[in-house]
Length: 111
Image 1 (cartoon, rainbow, N blue to C red):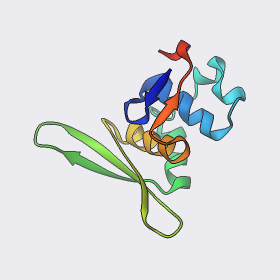
Image 2 (image 1 turned 60 degrees about the horizontal axis):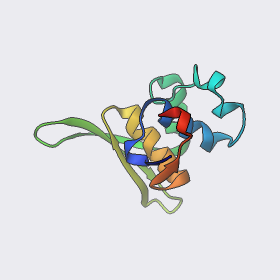
Image 3 (image 1 turned 30 degrees about the vertical axis):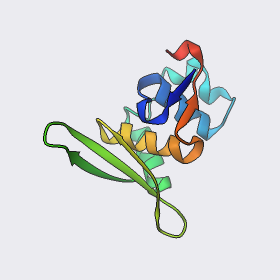
Image 4 (image 1 turned 30 degrees about the horizontal axis):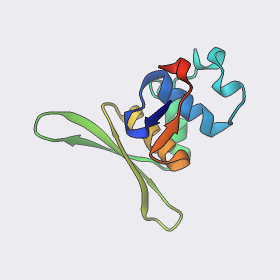
C-alpha cells in the first residue's frame, strides 16, 4: 500500500527506516522489526540523526506542540523537512523522505 511519508508512524515508519539501511534484508523482517524501533529508541534513531546531520526544532501552532526535522544537503542548504509529534518520529520521517521521497510503498501486512 502507498503511504505518505508524512503519515508514517509505528512499525510502518520503522520498516521504512530499515528499508533505507539495507533493502530486502534481515533489517526489514518481522523478527528484526520486533526490536528495531528507531522512531522510539534514541539509541537507534539518535545514530541516524547524528550520521545524517538531521536538526530538530520544537514547533507550536498555538494549539498543538510538535517537532520539525531538517536534513542538510552537501552544499549546506536544507533538503528535507518533516514533522511529527516526537523528535524521533519527525527525524525518521525526514530520513525516509531523503531516501524515498513523499510516498513509500509499505507491505500490506504492516497496516
